[in-house]
Image 1 (cartoon, rainbow, N blue to C red):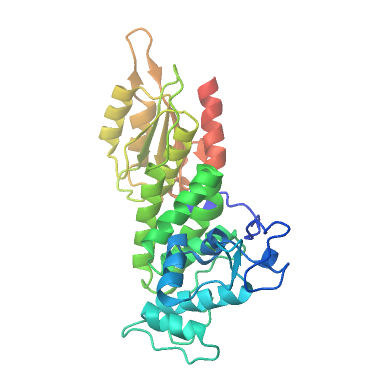
Image 2 (cartoon, rainbow, N blue to C red):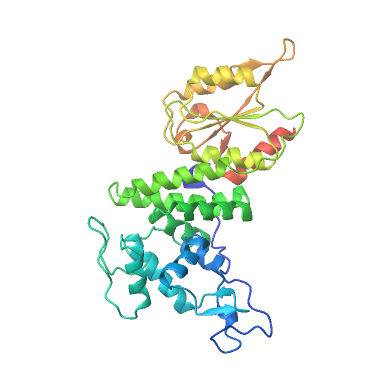
Length: 346
């Protein structure tokens, strides 16, 4: 469950192309047969990390739209159209007003306008320069999300997160799209001496909001809930929120207690909730590791004569050097959910 071991899959990026136009549907203004090379607005939005409504707004306001339409209405974006959009995105991310950025993007060979005063990026820098996030080989959705986050384009980030979670489900979306983007922001933050704090904070908040907004399946009858809490003093709860959302998708009851839960409060929660499993997350080494372990494993709950104890699972890199944690460690979201399901089925 640690961000460093989020179980990110290898290069499984799917093509970003939309559905080609059918036979007999030539594009307006282009020779017949060329429409099938264009991308849909949704595919382009995903690739660039902008909301589809933003692309339509740019076309309406600044005449920076596609040259091709199928059946006279469906937009199909060709490589040269996408190149103009990439330039538009690059310039607006530097602080250039949208109208000025659109004029420059529409004019081949134009001198790039100056960014707003105080911008840290140099004018004329090509896409993917020093301000790009270090993503490596990832899905196209991940790149779009990263671009939107760097632009601080909250509506686009919300749209991309919603689409990823709805299309792929919580676990694949987290491991293949969300976690790699969060890691890249963290690496950029560390290497740029605090420059990307605002990107990390905005992205984290929007990810948290998206996870909490996921529909939850009705809890399985007769299955005790799973209690989720961060170790005392631990403020980073996002991976635990992903686990909460993933359990909810599968109809597994979970009670989330959030960041920095003191050991005595954790013990009281265990006693009152009666969870079958307790998961405690720690990004950094927990200061009261022994107290956390005893708060879970040392508490009995249930009716007199039929007392039970909860199983403690630990997650996060902070537990790696804690002998008291034992061997029950979650090392990824997918494997963690599967382990919890197996334990609950006993």
